[in-house]
Amino acid sequence: MMNNTFICKDLKAELQEYLSSLPHDKLFVLTDTNTQQKCLPLLQDIPAIRNAPLITVPSGDTHKELEQLSFIWSHLSREGASRDSVLLNLGGGMITDMGGFAAAVFKRGIRTINVPTTLMASVDAAIGGKTAVNFNGLKNEIGSFHPPLAVFIDCGFLRTLDKDNILSGYAEMIKHGLISSPQTYASVLALDLNSPPDYTTLNQMVACSVAVKERIVKEDPKEKGIRKALNFGHTVGHALESLSFIKHTPLLHGHAVAAGIICELYLSHKLCAFPMPELSRTVHYIKTHYSPTLFTCNDYDTLCELMTHDKKNEGGTINFTLLAGIGDVRINQTADREKILDSLDFYRESFGI
Ligand code: GLY
View 1 (tube, rainbow, N blue to C red):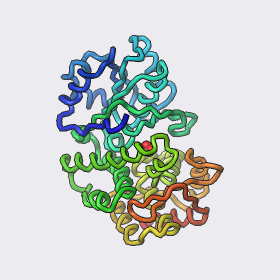
View 2 (cartoon, helix red, strand yellow; view 1 turned 90 degrees about the vertical axis):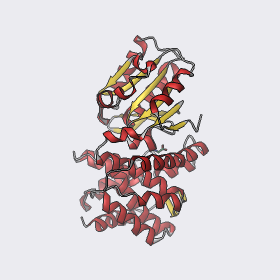
View 3 (cartoon, rainbow, N blue to C red; view 1 turned 30 degrees about the horizontal axis):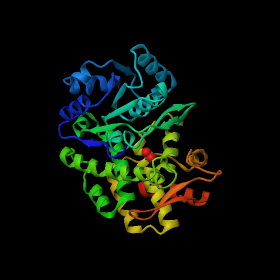
View 4 (cartoon, protein in one colour; view 1 turned 60 degrees about the vertical axis):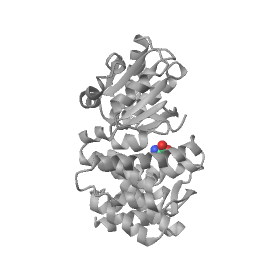
């Protein structure tokens, strides 16, 4: 079911109304230690939530793994969850990804409601139905498509986020702007993230960003074609993120994606004639707001190796989504090693590193 995302003016009232008209036998709430403390109290006035069994896992992406899944399933079983039960995932992408997957396979599938509490989850992870856990050191290796019944977004939660986490989510909004239209992209670049965010404006922009993703997912829910547009910036971005874990200097996902966007816009310029002035405008915006992602030419072999293992690849070639212009998406593109290395050079030169 699509278009089930609510950008809330009054989260408590809207969620309460939704839950009271939703046929179900039991509601369960999944949080992590952070969101249990910072976000759950904001929803405790809702009787269905106050009375729901609470499942809390440790916070942090390193806990998005089989052991915690087993913990969630044990809890659901012990408390008598049935196929008519609903799991409400309250948290960032780690919770919506893992809770979504736990629900997808528990008794062959129970329904979920996502209440994202980070910008990253609001504009990306919580919507579109991708669910997963990490496995064997590989991110999101085990998962399924299990769309949530509904998603309730309230930018009020974002007040508890630090600037790095706002920037991390904003990288996905930059991506949504680039793959959608010049107007949407212009509004994304108009927001100065160096000033304290205006949450009303941010709420409107989140609504617009969510609409971009929902439109694409509706057309291609299982990523056979155009949903690959959402991977823009992520082929290089994921490699940089994995490299940062290998080097024990972990990057937030969106910071790696921001760097990946620059590299893949460079490839778009070289291979699909993406206009240089737009590339320069994007480099300027990202440089103004994001710290450089640090790597050297000694990392190039590892980065290329990581890109060849990207799960989006087919037939051994690295699969890129590129752009011929803003909103003009070209999926299933390839680039040779020399061009990929040029794009990494371009990033380092742009940031002077
Ligand atoms: N995060 C990319 C997607 O949902 O397809």
